[in-house]
Image (cartoon, rainbow, N blue to C red; front, top):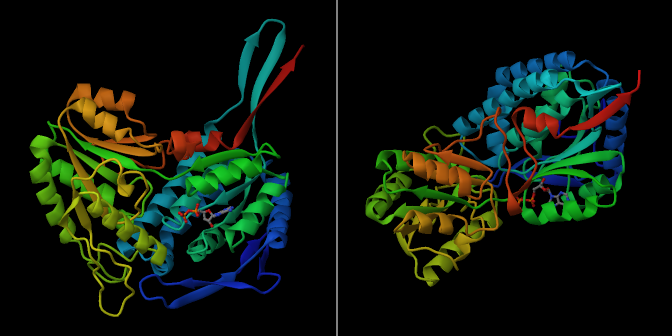
Length: 475
Ligand code: ADP
């Protein structure tokens, strides 16, 4: 398979010959090397994109839609191969990788349809003929994280292409192979060369080259709040458009009327996908005091039964964390919580499956957690469930909103008044009520406050890639 940069029709290594190693996080085996590119490779990718834009923007939306649909079919046909690349460099269980490919593919038809449906409008002004048009913004860039390397890319790439934009993609350095494989498949499916380009390498120089080039009109980024701020600052000179999907710190509120089976189902689904390395994963569990003990007992039990191991082995629920930094953070959060009065209901240690790296923390349930603990303010990004009980709804919502972030939030309740209250007051861009998987391709996905701005998914994702132009004519 190709492991080089994709620039227009060319596959180019790093000009200065530097390479980055891609390691299997479960074993530390070398999977491949990719170019460690810099400003020059990035400039060439922007050149290729800018030149492809001149044709792609003129292709009728319905024809662009056809290409996107063919790409979606190719992803489904090639699911097994892509899933194994994804699991190898990222670690997640194969079943989750397959689901990620399907989820990624689902963005293509949604964007294709939205691209066709966003039409010119007319505004009725006496004596004038006023048209409101949508134009593609031009060359865009996608900077993606390692936790869902294919899905996060599809979320950015599908609406960009549907809108008539072209893209330079910088995948995360831990998981570049999935991004390369995704784009190669797209090109085989008929996306014209230059519409999608991939540059791999250490992020700083590539990011700075994207920010410095005035031809780049928009960056879609998913990653940390810190890097999001860096892109905002760096984009100021060129008045760059940004969509920033930044970190989260999702609360999950289990209200007094909650059905316990349902609460556990939602918690398990939302928390342990990708071993907790998910930006919409709950990082605080707020449970009504009458349900608290039973909830904790059942959550601890269900969490302990999850099987850790290599993602390509049958029956594995939890793969490794991505790297040693991620593992250290999980244990820092556990140690800090314990030092501040929390207790362990289950887990707390390492699983150490034989022959594998020590990146398999036990799924952990912590009791008596609360504000002041690191796990209440920083994204843990691992299989840790900090729990706290509450006595009334006011307290639950106040605690839930004690975060600068606002990406996802969850509630378990069937009470219509509580549901309305949550919809009105919970500080989150995506709210799941009895729903541990609220993100689907046809709905907007994105955060508020320090979780960023801009939406991916549905027509909202496509609109982010269009400029609205008014043409006012006096007949
Ligand atoms: P995480 O902590 O999830 O790895 P990051 O924000 O560091 O989050 O990374 C998300 C993406 O942003 C990755 O593709 C990474 O390479 C990229 N990135 C990191 N630093 C920069 C930067 N200075 N400029 C552009 N992209 C960056």
